[in-house]
Amino acid sequence: MGKGLFDLEKHFTSYGAYHNDPMNIMIHTIFAWPTLYTALVLFQFTPTFFTFALADDKVIAFNFAFVFALIYVVFYVLMDPKAGSLAAVLCFLCWIGSEPLASHLGFSLGWKVVLATQVFGWTGQFLGHGLFEKRAPAVLVNHVQAFLMAPLFVLMTVLQKLVGYEPYPGFHARVRKKIEADRKAWKEKTGEETDLR
Image 1 (cartoon, rainbow, N blue to C red):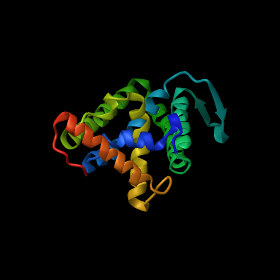
Image 2 (cartoon, rainbow, N blue to C red):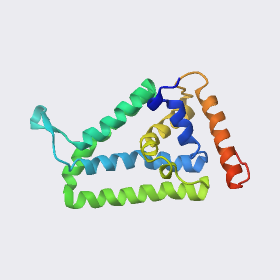
Image 3 (cartoon, helix red, strand yellow):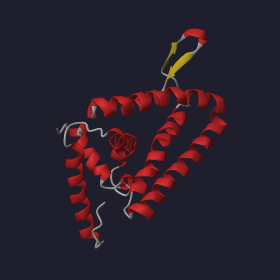
Image 4 (cartoon, rainbow, N blue to C red):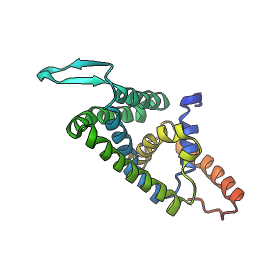
């Protein structure tokens, strides 16, 4: 099941160990995708590599917003072809939807809206860790993994709760066992009482 950089079980366990409290997970579910979307809005103001003309004189611009979205798409599909493909579609929808908003706002207002949204979203997630998780955010430990995993983690968590989705049989049981071991070790190290959810 291990695929190195694209080892879903490893990444899900690592991220899940920092996102165990139901309230904290709910907060991340609310903020993870809007944080990604608004980052794409900001990247729409970067130089265009090339354009693709559509009907009705509409043009799709390929810039760093596209590259940013593509990184997420590749990462997700290679980690889990099923849920990752759904996440990839959502990433592309965010990319496509970010251009009209960026054009409507313009750079002078757009970066302010993005900054306000990012500050609000990140503050909410940090408060989730401080108030409910009682553990520092994963982003302080592994920046790249935390940024990439957050949207997929919340999507897979929702899919698991709604339809019992598992990438393969026993995935969630294996991940839960590893998360509990990680949290137990962390609590013993920090002197916290063990309270595994």
